[in-house]
Amino acid sequence: MRRTPESRVAKAPAFEPPRYIAIEGPLRVGKSTLARFLADRMHARRVMDCEDNPFLADFYREKRGSAFRVQMYFLIERHRRVQEALAAAGTVIADFLFEKDKIFAYLNLDNEELKLYERYFERFAAELPRPGLVIYLQASPEVLRERIERRAAPGESRISHEYVEEVARAYDHFFFRYASSDLLVVNTSEIDFVNRNADLQQLLRRLEEPVKGTQYFLPLGGG
Image 1 (cartoon, rainbow, N blue to C red):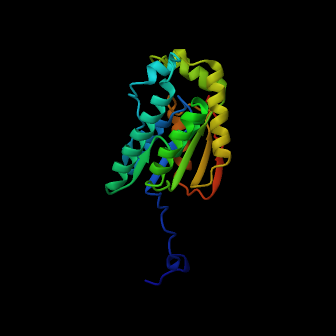
Image 2 (tube, rainbow, N blue to C red; image 1 turned 120 degrees about the vertical axis):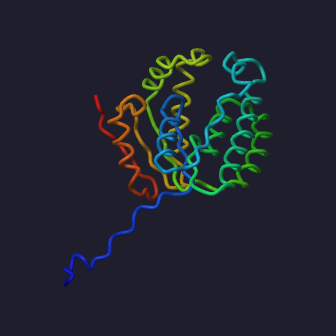
Image 3 (cartoon, rainbow, N blue to C red; image 1 turned 90 degrees about the horizontal axis):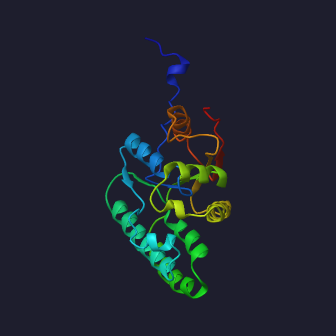
């Protein structure tokens, strides 16, 4: 059988996702949900952020000295989890970016505490590779406050509106300058992929395409 010109055209290779993907964003923006779906879809190892920090309750109560203890515990635990996951074979999906630890350090630590913190941060950061892709889930402070109140997790009711706004601004500032990895910025203020499957599928379709440099995705809300 004679081959047509179309049959002689080689098919483009399928998109090969990076081996190490990190998902970031403020509290209740949907990091863990997206990481779970991506890990299932890609048969990847999922690395969860630390949610059992024993010093967090004291921090929410604004107990003296608790911020430094919280920050150092997160730093050490996040480093351990990423390092162990990357030592194994296969794709890794983390619902946090190791470098984001500095966002909260600069928000919560005083100058002397920062000097000590940065010595450990630089040492730990040098031991970890950069992700091939970072997904930054962005949302307005108003949307974040609404989701925090809806979730009503223990301890989070103590988080002030001012602190939520401060964190949201700090994240935007951090990722505006971020250039260490390919970066996809996803505005989630108009979608709710945690509770609406149509919104989730829209986001997953975008993630089937490659990301080069910094790109932005502003999905349409599902209503």
